[in-house]
Length: 628
Image 1 (cartoon, rainbow, N blue to C red):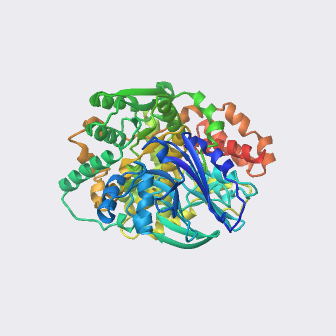
Image 2 (tube, rainbow, N blue to C red; image 1 turned 90 degrees about the vertical axis):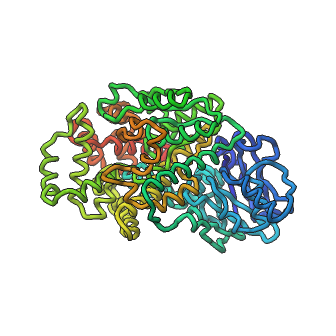
Image 3 (cartoon, rainbow, N blue to C red; image 1 turned 180 degrees about the vertical axis):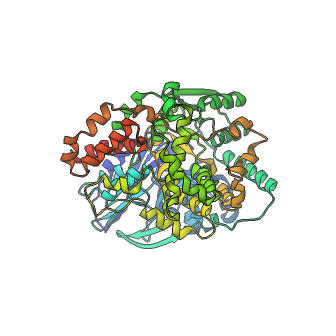
């Protein structure tokens, strides 16, 4: 796992990439290297986190045995050993110089070209330069697990694993994209391919781009086999296949020459991965989780993770390291904002950082995560909300607003969370189909969020999402929601913050649910087995019943979050500092009156704007760094 930089430019273009590599040094503190082509039309760089083959033989950029191709690569290829065998069967004995997956990519490409890249199963972003034909190929894995940013300026294409790598190049323009500010407050991130800047984008996953002299000359999608037709099989057969495929996925992703540990929240997904890893007899001694106080949970009223995490760790015979969450975690934000690119403002990002930091300090370099199951198997509450809506009598839908409006938002205790969700369901039930579906993804009303801004030319933050849902509602609504989850919440948020906040401390996170063999299988599962009689992730639960206690499998879903409703239930030093009228007027971006109204409703208990306020706080910290 590493950080990479690549530039395709006109010939004899003097480009300095040392500052860019320094900006992403945290991603690969073990080694670094650069390559400049003879005509200076290609510049490649890498900072390395050594995980497979810790020797200098894994140094990058790496040149193949023929001397024609050079690669800079970030990621892990889980099937590289089988590809290595396949290459030797087809082409004879190869004089390997290392035991790295990088060399397998390079030697495979040198023999089979672009087609070889479609055989990769892993998490990756790479650039390969053809010295003879002066062509640069750039590819990001088809799920979008690993990030890759680019900007096209001054007749050159610049690429980096993080935006800060691009911002380190001299003379490149950067303009704050105001529409991204709106989207950040709505989603807690900026949907791909956009970023917080007009000039910077994310590379589209799964497409192999070819460049020459700073000009894009080709683009080819390589991973069509991941999208297959839905199959008709018996429920028990699918459940067994799902378990076996996941077990194989975990085994593949355990390959490492350094210690491996686990995220273990005590939920179904992380417990499943933990079980499969330990069952595969991996040398895993511990796992990590977050807990918070009962007092803080009075506001959030989420199912407590710690009981289930301890139970699962005890069953597996591993040590559980518990990180206690407290209000002081918010003091980390000014530092973490430098890593939370793309407008990321989900409190879960802080959790990921804290766990990654603790694990790294304990000598861990690789962790397994349960991410990905929700977005491929109907795991989020929006699927349950849509199920309830579809099965609700028409007269009940008409009565919902009347009932909801007569229930105060300031109720505390165990009824607070159900009431909050009921009110959201009531609001969404009165909307048109695509407004309702998009509302499931947004932390507030689109019109209200837009009204925070003085610039009235900005559009509602849900317009792009509504268009996406309309375009993809071809089979059924759940299929459209799944695709939206995969493009929006999975790729643009969950995978993004996991990469950034783990790599901030030089730690790699792997996601076995998103192994390509798992993707192929999950794309074939009939929707009625994903959501059956209102039970979310039904087929995964059935698959794991023989292996994990039902108490864990069928527990209430809890987000991987912090108790920020407690922390933002009243005014604090952060809201006082970052949202003073004087400060907002000076920025000339926000409508001070509307901002003050948001806080009045929050602190009085009239409305719950907690996640919107947290996103606003993250945005203000970021803007302070940009505007000062």
